[in-house]
Length: 338
Image 1 (spheres, helix red, strand yellow):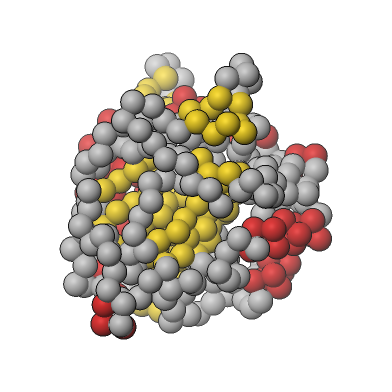
Image 2 (cartoon, one colour):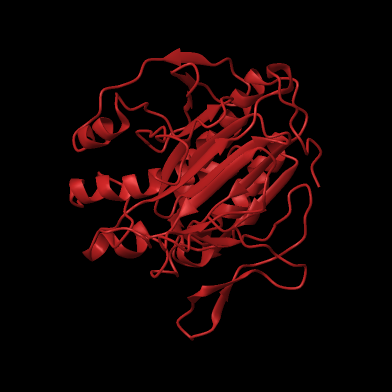
């Protein structure tokens, strides 16, 4: 899979991708920093046409978010729908997942996502329950619910009920599905610890990002520097929420009010999910944060969006480690963040 690079003056241009105005699409660029933005290249698999979105290259980590291109589904699910709970034909979704898996080192660890804050330890096979710095406890895997049995069969076992997953094992592929919610990838700076999280407003408010980082730190207390990528999700201009969502954030963190715009006289707010995620990651101690700058709502040609379409498919964000820790016989490179 070809990965495009960026320059300080302009985002990457994918020659195979053109916008509705006929001009090449460009990704946003910005500065690097403790909680800053960074450019998001688009990578195109020339052989299959599978289009993916990713961030800057990380040592020891591969990660990307799929788009709706490159699969075989039709109608509202065209074409690379990876969610079996969406009403799409299950055989077609299985084909789409096989198309994705052909580009991965192994079968992804799928989750039964419930807009919560629990974290699945994919190495230990247990769900970690907790918030913030509270002590995590283990919870058993749950049987798949109605409409989820096919997901479980494709995953090869019961699905973990969680909205995040972590691993320290190379080539163990973590996966989450989204269609407006944010996919977030986290990793140690040396590329030997990895986590992914499904972050809608409920999960963000409950602390799914903090819990994921906390679970990683429990496994790797020696790591001092962490990084994160916030993938495509709904933008603020199209994410109208009620006062209960605003209160869910500001009651616990007054600074969160900066990421809401009031619609006067309507009791409604426009919520900036990517900025809320960046704010929470920075407060939790993540050293380098990238935002994709991609809004799923405004790009029906590239992304599924539940709020825009109602009946729609699901994107998948997948990530895996490529190297072992120093004490396992391989010295990781690039342990210092830029």
